[in-house]
Image (cartoon, rainbow, N blue to C red; front, side):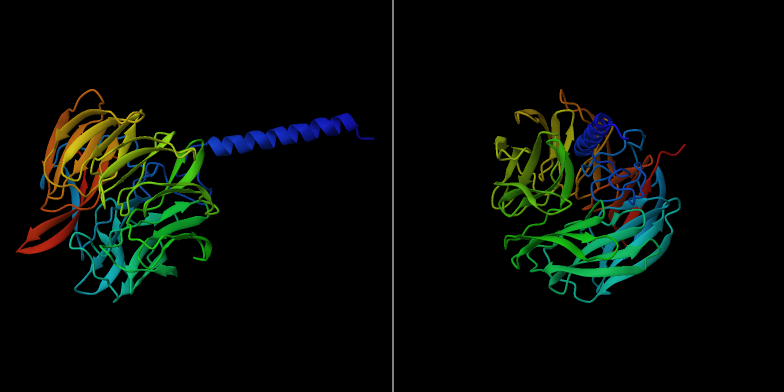
Length: 433
C-alpha cells in the first residue's frame, strides 16, 4: 500500500523542482543557441540585427583586424546589386544581405559564400511597389534575421509592410502583410527571432503595429496596436530586471512587452516621437534615445516603476548605443564619441571623431569599431577612464549600414565611386599575414 507521507514528499519535491526550473528560466540570460531548441545558430555567428545578444556586442573570443585599407587585410569583396543600409547577417557558411534596386524596381535578399564572397543566389521578394523615402534612407534598411533554418526580412512595399520567410536556399516559404504603412522618411525596422516567433514592427501615420508571427507558417500569433505616428526603431529583446523583455522606443513612449504573448509589461511616457536607435540595457535600466522633435538620451528603470534615473539633451538619434560593465558608450550623430556612467549619466569623457554617423558601433572585447558616413572607421578602447584611439581606417566613399564582426572577420557594406557611378560592395576584412 502506498505511503501517504511518501506521496506528500514526492509532491513537495515535484513542486520545488518546478519552482526552481521556473526561476532559472526567468533569470537565464538570452543566448542565441538557448532561446529555443529550434534556433540552430552558433553563438559565434551574427544571426540578426545587432548580433547574437542583440546589443552590438560581438563574441569577445576573436581578434578582428584593427587596421585595413582597400588593399590591406581584405579577404574578399563582392559587388552588391542595388543599395541598402542593412547589415550583413552571417550564419554557418553564408552571408545574407537585403538590398533594393530602384532601376529594376525590386527588393531582394542576397546570399554570399562566407569563405569566398561568391554570390550564390538572389531572391526577389518584391517586384514593383518601392516607396518614396528620405534621401538618406533606402528601400532595404532592415537586416535579415536567421533561425538556422529560415531567413526573415521586413520590407515596406505598396503602402504596406510585409514580413517574408525564405529557406536557406532562397525559396519563399511564406509572406504576411503586417500592416498598412504610410512612408514618412523611410522604413528601417529589422525583424527579431524569439522562441517560436518572428517579431516585427511598423510604426507610421497609418497606425502602428507590433506583432509576433509563427516562424513556420507566418500566421500572426499576437498583435499590439501602436499610435499613429512615424517611427523607425526595431523591436529588441533584452534580459532586464530579471526577465526577457521585448522593448520598443518611440511614438513618445518607452514600451516593454512579453515577447511570447505581446502583453504589455510596462509602458511610460518618454522617448521622442521619432527614434531610430535600438535600446540597450545594463540589467537594471534601458536607455532611450531619439532626435525628433527633441534630442534626448534617458536611463529608464526596467522594473516598471517608471522611474527615470537621468536624462540629457545629447543627440544620439541614429547610431545605437553600447553598454559595458556599468558604462554607456555612444557616438553622437555629429561625430562625437562619449562615455557615460550608466547609473548617473555623468559623462566620463567626450572626443570628437569627425564626420556624421548613421551606422551603429560594435564592441569586441574592449575595442569599439565606429564607422562614419564617408567610410572612416575609428577603432578605440571601451575605457571609462580615457579615450584611447587605436586606428582610423578609410574604405570607400559611403557607409550607412552597421558592421558585422564574427569569426575574427569584419563584414561591411561600402559604397564606392566606380567610373562615376555609385556601386555598393560587400567587404570581408581579415588579418592577413
